[in-house]
Image 1 (tube, helix red, strand yellow):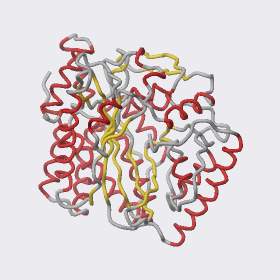
Image 2 (cartoon, helix red, strand yellow; image 1 turned 180 degrees about the horizontal axis):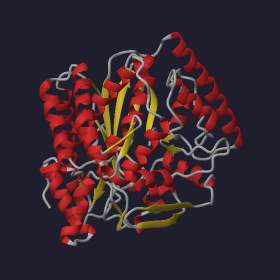
Image 3 (cartoon, one colour; image 1 turned 90 degrees about the horizontal axis):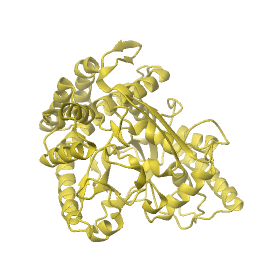
Length: 473
């Protein structure tokens, strides 16, 4: 959830000063765009993978601090809860055999992390899944929050702005889940696979619009979150769970801090940062010295969780750049599945980013937003609308999107071996209509098992490394 902060107590003056700094930095970013100071280099990719730290009974174990001290690797960091971790990779140019390199690096990091987990004070294991089937409400309390000032300050500020002084969760899926929470720890019940694309700043709005449009198909093929608190809900329950877990009253506008967004960008991703200034109140007014990195703008942006989010960063030479962060899909089931998801995403994002750059018309925004929530609920089981035409997701992906993803990857000069390897995995998953979510449901229906047994079998299959479309029941 972003960088650490220095304190957790704020005065009205802090908020006023921070907002002034935010306004100045938004204007400075506007000037950078006008002057062409942001990087227009070719595409660079990278990931964040959120994971669970579990004991041998497949329940969360609050040992991420001990784990991180022993792992001592900059590619790992804490998440909101003490039982959660984030793993990153080294960003790479999207060219040649980059996806094979991504997979090899992530698997190597994971093997080292697993060895550390096994030797913690409570022998533990790591799991990648969108929502944890064995998760229990008793694990949600302030004591299980990671020891970072950022998280505790966020909790205090969000709860202070909560519409009803508590967070109300209501998700109607195959079953109904309804409960209240006095902390933001509900957010810790989700784990994502976040895909980053550093894009040419002058074209970033086209890549952002492409990410919006393909979010629904991405959720269809990657769904892995059907169960939480013993309830069978959406195929990708992470979506409503995260949106409702940070549900604050916004005194500036009616916009939620976690959402699909407010619309397409017309001319520049600067529009997103301007919307941040105009439509979202400050949550963490940490006053920093002006070091030229627009730290207030970046911190504020980090407290607004659109499912596709522009980010401002800086390369080793200090040049600013824009990344598009795709947050819509879950962790798991395996590394080869996640890299296949990434290949599909990067290919489509580049294909449509270039199409929009060349003047191709956008579909109606309300259409793609509706598609997103339909996909999260139903995955393959319900039609969506594509440029005004209703279509089954299987037909859309097989006949239209996979060829477009292949073309986009060829435009990036990805090797044919990588294209064939990872898109064939995606094609087989679509042919079988078996995602992590559908496999979980099939297994429970066939074996009438409890959530612990489901998680044990899932973990074993994840450890095998076999892509999810090959998993038997």
